[in-house]
Image 1 (cartoon, rainbow, N blue to C red):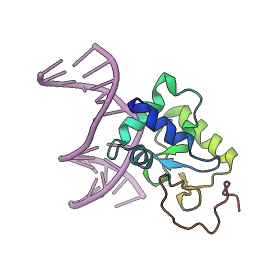
Image 2 (cartoon, rainbow, N blue to C red; image 1 turned 135 degrees about the horizontal axis):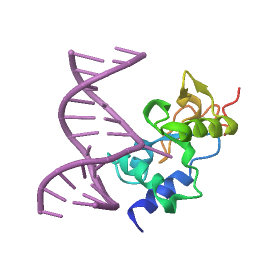
Image 3 (cartoon, rainbow, N blue to C red; image 1 turned 180 degrees about the vertical axis):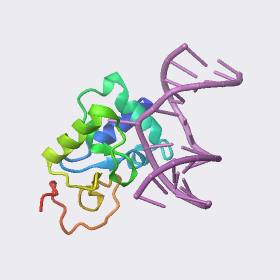
Image 4 (cartoon, chains in turn yellow, cyan, orange; image 1 turned 45 degrees about the horizontal axis):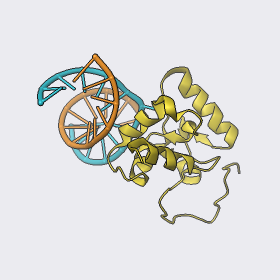
Length: 113
DNA sequence: CCCTTGACTTAGA
DNA sequence: GTCTAAGCCAAGG
């Protein structure tokens, strides 16, 4: 299994309507502190087909520049991710890979109220 | 082997 | 809220 394979694996576990940060994905993939490599992996040609749009920067910020960033936000909104002041609502839509139990009360896939 | 490049993160000012 | 600096690490030149 390659280095990026783990990252891609984790990204695929992010359910529709939820998002995760680069750091979270890196940690869940077994590469703590390698958030940048997550971005690298997503940018990689072989990453075609996975839900890249569900990976955001810390705090739910979109880091992908230009039109792509706009597209990302649009795709997420269509999935039901709520945005507040340019940031994804991590409180509701933040996916936490690797177990971790927090606020499971309303664990629906979408974040639409 | 050294240097640069990122869709990063955290801590401070 | 913003901005800067340092730490981070694989890939590519």
